[in-house]
Image 1 (tube, rainbow, N blue to C red):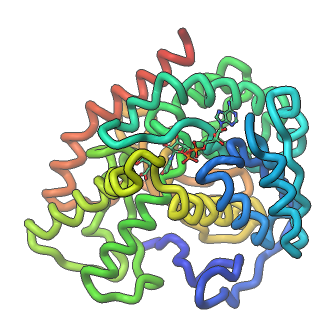
Image 2: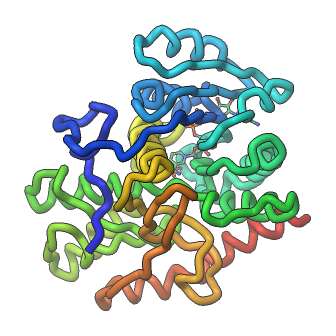
Length: 341
Ligand code: NAD
Ligand code: LMR
C-alpha cells in the first residue's frame, strides 16, 4: 500500500531525521499565503520561510501583515519574503505564484460548528479565489479556511465561472486529520510516530472525518470499543483545541505544521518527485453522487495526479462512511449554491 510521506522524509529539517532522498529537480517556486497575519498564517509563514523548495513567499492579509513580513524576512534562509496589505495589493501577492495557501477567515469559538463560520468565510474565500483565477489561474489553491467541506466547492465553482477550473489544482487541506490520527494511534499502540500513517478520508468536519484505522501502516488492531473511541477522538480533536483555547481561536500551530507538510509534498510533486501521497479533500468520482471527497492522492507536476480508490473498509468504517454521506453532500451543495447565488 502507498503510504503518505512520514515526518522523517521532510526536507525542511524540522523533523528529527532529515531525508537522504535526493530531490529529482528543484525549480523555483513562489508560494502565496493569504491570511498570513493570523493565528495559522504566522507560524505557517515561518515554516515556509524554512522550506528549501520555496524561493519566494508572498504574505497577504487585510491587517497586520507588514510586521509579520519584516519579522520573518530576517531569518537567514534564502526564501525571498514580501508582504502585501489589503485588496489593492492582492494582485502583487498572487502574480507568478504556483501555490496559494488560504487560511484567511474567522476561526471557531466554543459552542460553534465549522459550518457556523460559513456566513463570514464563504465570501472571503470567494473573493480571494476570484482574484487568484484572474491573476494566477494556473496556480494550485489549497484551502485551509473552514468549513473546508463547503469552501472547496465554492472555489471550484468560482474557477468554473471564470473558465479557469482545473480540479487537479484545488485542494482542501485535511492534513491535520492525518497528523492527529498518526499521533493518537502511535500513542495508543506505543509506536514510533514517524513510522505511522493513517489515511483519513471523507471531509473535514465532525462525522465526515473518517480515519481508516483498518488501513493504517503498520497494521494495528483495535477492539470495536477502542475503534469507536479512537475514531471519535480524531473527529473531535479540533473541538478539543477550540475548547482549550476558550474563545481565543482554534488549532493554529498544529495546523501550520500540517499545512507546511501538505505544501512541501505539493512542491515535491510539482518538482517531479515520484511517489508523493497525501490525503486531501478534492473533486473526484471516487464516491458516486458525492462530487467532493477527501481521499488519498498521488501528487505530481500538475497537482493531483491520481485520486486513489478508498480500498477495503471494515464494517465499522463502512457504517461511518454511509452515515456521514448526507452531511458531506449537503455541505458541498451549500458551497455550490453560495457561489452561484
Ligand atoms: P485568525 O483569525 O487568527 O486569522 C485569520 C486571518 O485571516 C487574520 O489575519 C485576518 O486578518 C485574515 N483575513 C480575514 N479576512 C481576510 C481577507 N478577506 N483576505 C485576507 N485575509 C483575511 O484565524 P486562524 O486561527 O488563522 O484560522 C483561519 C481559518 O482556518 C479559520 O477559518 C479556521 O476555522 C481554519 N482552520 C482550518 C483547519 C483545517 O484543518 N483545515 C485547522 C485550523 C483552522
Ligand atoms: C481543526 O480541525 O482544528 C480545525 O478545523 C479548526 C476547528 O474549528 O476545529
